[in-house]
Image (cartoon, rainbow, N blue to C red; front, side):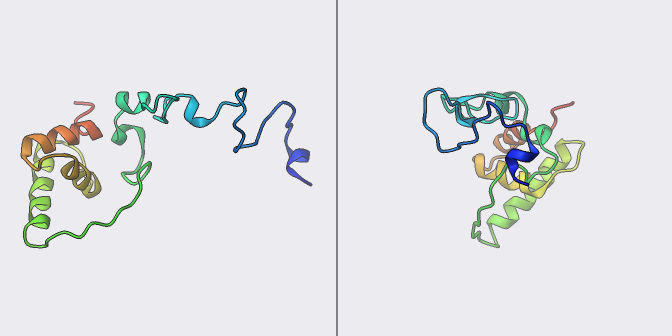
Length: 124
């Protein structure tokens, strides 16, 4: 029993590599989940922060390895985690702290702005 036997495939185009003008791909349409449209913008992601959109801080993100100085960098990340916990009345995920620190200039104000962009304090 093949795929065509299990599903009604009349009119469906499942050719992902097609570049015909009548076939629209995921990148040519916009959706509420934040996927890019034909201009490359992520309309949905600007409206709904990552923390609200996904169940886990790992969802919708790709892992990368960074090598940090244990004396300075890791200490600052711990300080920023404490800053976030004192400013937001919700569980603060370490992964979100790392991302906000990466996106900020490591000042408390810039870091907290990035945490808000991720979705902390969204329902306050």
